[in-house]
Length: 82
Image 1 (cartoon, rainbow, N blue to C red):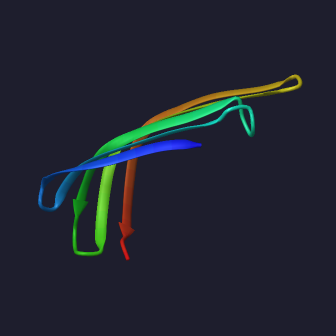
Image 2: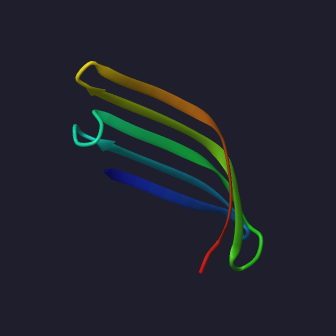
C-alpha cells in the first residue's frame, strides 16, 4: 500500500485536507485505491470534526469469482487527538 495525505490551514480552526492511497498489486486484490478530501474544523484543542467526500475502487478476481466495486459519497468524522 502506498499513500499520501496533506492538510492546508485556511484559518486558525479551519483546514482543507486530502488523502489518497493505492494498494493490492496482486496480493490481496488486483487493485484497490481511494481518494478523499474535505474541510476540518478544530472544535477544541483535542476535538475535531471533518466533512468531505470519498471515492473508493476495489477490483478482485480469483478463479471464476470477480468483484469490482466503486463506492463514493459524503464523509463525516469526529475525533479526539491525543
